[in-house]
Image (cartoon, rainbow, N blue to C red; front, side):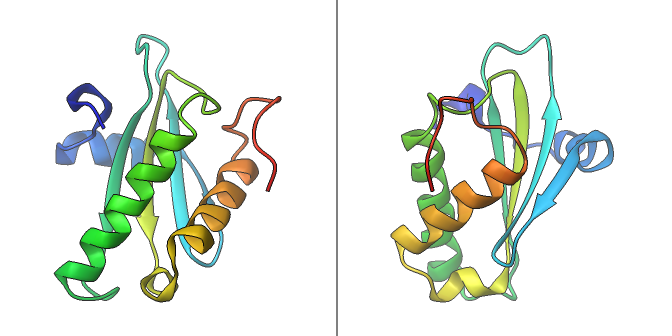
Length: 118
């Protein structure tokens, strides 16, 4: 992910939490906030220590970033996304994570219409 596509500051996370719309399934919670003045989408990741040790949490974050990168063309731009990984993601492989994340993105209506099939 490029630097301008990441959410790092606590204030930015809090804004998405307060003003954004949330959608969830058993593995992920996604908050989405429309930003009209922003040409690209930005992503913030949160993986709790309850999910696992650092190696597990970093693997989950790398996988989620890769999935967002892979489907960046289908995602609506001009938005901030915050992805929260829940405990079941610790035992998932990349393809299961991809399927689950696409499912929750579809439910959030943030994929373009010609977008992705599950």
